[in-house]
Image (tube, rainbow, N blue to C red; front, side, top):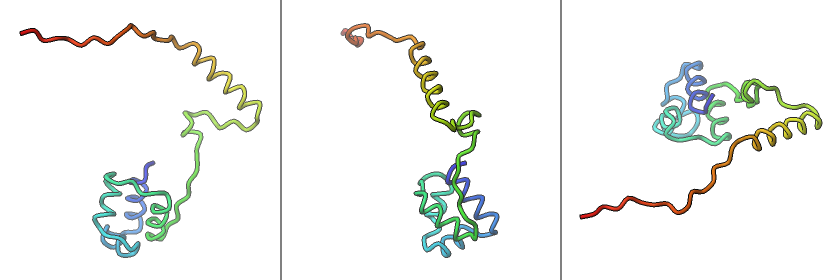
Length: 109
């Protein structure tokens, strides 16, 4: 979930308008609108402050879903095995060789 969705959800759960949230957070309604519509990206601290102004708390975490369904490696051995897998995969990808100079079409008159 991105910052815009987090902020919008927190504001709506609190039953606040953008103007009310802006007043509580010490900013302006256009700034809240820009964050909620993805025209601006708040920093983590700004997002935390805005969510706190709704009466909620922002909790950041990583889920297994964020890693493509693969849980994070818990031991050095698992990390090493995954690194070897990635390197073997990289070696298996065919390389493209340069074909020489880039040629541009010419327009004759």
